[in-house]
Amino acid sequence: MAILLLILISVLIAGLAVFILWTIFIYNQLVSLRNEVQNAWKQIDVQLKRRHDLIPNLVSIVKGAMEFEQDTLEKVVSARTRAVAATKPQEKAAAENMLTQALGKLFAVVESYPQLKSNENIMQLQEELTTTENRIGFARQLYNDLVANFRTKLEIFPNNIIASLFSFQREEYYSAAEADKAVPAADISIRKT
Image 1 (tube, helix red, strand yellow):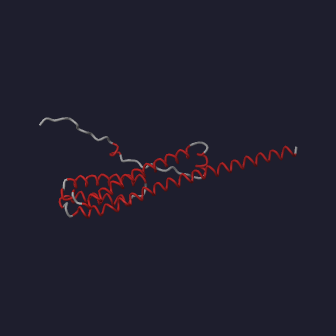
Image 2: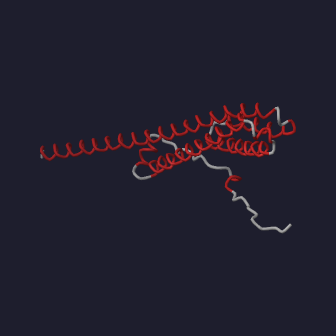
Image 3: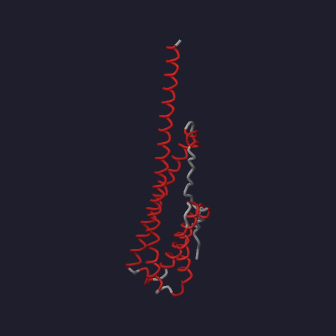
């Protein structure tokens, strides 16, 4: 009887040890993924800061030559201010989308000014902004991939038990604004003049 009790206690202790090790393993996985998501978010912030730092230079160069387009410049500056102030992923996404639209309008206006179009500094800043936009796109993609992995780990059984036990929270995706999702209409009809 004593041997049977000893075996039962050993099995319970081994089971408890396996449960504790399993809990530690799952917890560490979730912490690692959460940290990767936070790091990816900070990488987006780094690229957005670079973008925000380039915009005042572009505006100051363009300002003198675009006397009649002050409204466009004001929209860029205003959108930049909102983007810098945004903190949450959804709020930041909306503000950055507004900034992208304002920059697009500014670049379209620059195209109509030959003296600006040929300005070496403006062309260099446009190229740097375009490169930065590409980096932002890649950083957003990485962030969303990591958020998807993290959410999956949080939601699958038995990880969901450990996640709820230690109060892990789902991260939000970085998503495009509804206006950016609309398919642009293209008129490719041939007209006779």
